[in-house]
Amino acid sequence: MRAFEALGETLTAISKDKKLWRYPVIALGMARVLISLSDHVLNRNIWIAILIALSSLLLQLTVVYYPTRAFYYHQKKTPFEESALVMESITGGIKVLLVSIVYGLVVLIVGGLFLLPAILAYYILSGTARYVLAGLLGLPPAILLMGVIAMMIPAYVWTRDFGEGLGVIGVALDNAKEVFVFGALMAAVSVGLWGAAQGLVFIASLVAEGITGALLAGLLDGLITGLSSVISGVAGAAMYRKLRVWVEKERPVRVDPDWLASL
Image (tube, rainbow, N blue to C red):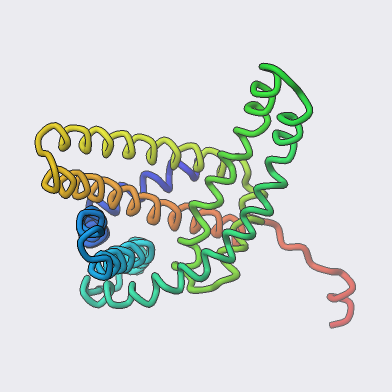
């Protein structure tokens, strides 16, 4: 199944090439430390707090772009310098932010259509039945939608083509079973890493107090979140590529006989 193949390819690539994960993990760790620091200085100097928060945002934007593009170079066997890709990721991350706004609007519309039966069941029924039926009707399309969302930005970063991100929706509908499994895998990985991050944050709060505890908690949370971002970005790109192979090689080509007759 392509979903498991994509996740396996992701883990293999990350284990073999540390340049895929080293910067994003460190950058997210630093970004979360900066957020904790900005909260601490907010009451003392709001402008310094804003400057620190903007620096954190910039780091987070680069991480949105970096893992997928690094995986692109990895798969193409194209040598790259991490510092050069970090600089590329600054403008790339800003573009991703703008593209995400449009993609987000499209996902809201598509998601509303996917979840319409669950929404109707929730408002039409009453009592326990409304929650049970809404859950049964809403969970499968929600997981499918999660798989779609996980591929949209990686598809854009991989190809640098705005239309490719939107095209993921159509490809996903043609491969609903595969994308559903992929969405479930991504959800499981995200929840698992989120739980690990929260556990480390809790331990940090026991070990240290005050600003030291906050900075340590932010660092640990950021490191785990960075790893999650790497897995999500690389897996999204890997799954997108596998589905594109199906579109280009396995989907039957329909030729218009009238067009052939006109030759």
